[in-house]
Length: 273
View 1: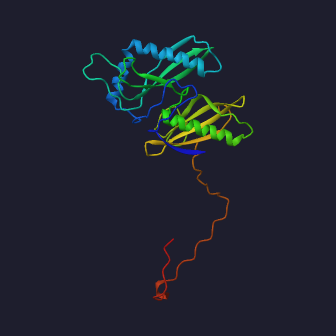
View 2: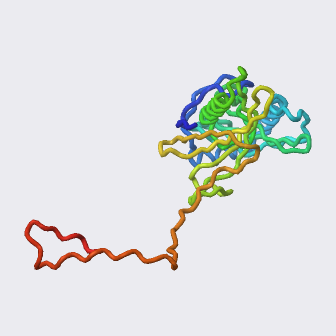
View 3: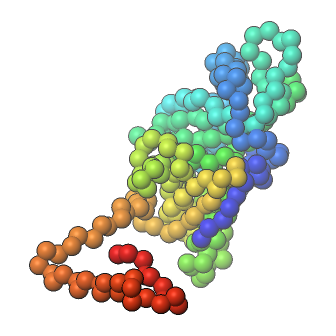
């Protein structure tokens, strides 16, 4: 199944939302804005604590396998929108406009998990707003996540129409990046990437493999397919060059064209072999 989604699209994201959804801005922030966001992240203990506490709450809501939190560590944020900061404020104030993602890695039950939040800049004294995103390692922006989530659910329903439940995406895992030669690797070659999304559907755990390929219009062409758990993404096979069999008889040579002296004005000379 294929669907083309623009990264500028934004919609309500999960069955476990924290706050109302807003419309997303541009998908990529400028380098200067990214640097300023990193400085804000490193110099605001209050917001850092808020992100970590919210991550713990989401972890207990979203991760079915474990509710124990042994350790939670905030990761570097991911900028999405056109971030704007308050003028003439000393230090490293929070953005008052724009979108970015916050990530918290949590160690629980002997496994490492990741929960994600969308941060929304605002001028209120409480600071940026946080809302739930899909847990896991997905590289997709919030709007693309929403589109891929619907595609995965539709793919599952088409394969099994015996149950009336709504498929629910529960976790995402990055499989690798598409390389220039069509293989899958760890380096981001800007050719797209592959993920495995886990869904809960009618008391079953169903994996869906997602492919995200840039469509050249600031968006992605998304493909979803049912797979086995942990299956490798499809890899483009190199073209096979036929090798001549030395034992095979040679093809007969093409007949030579008649000499020019035998041609009339209505005849045409075939191209030379």
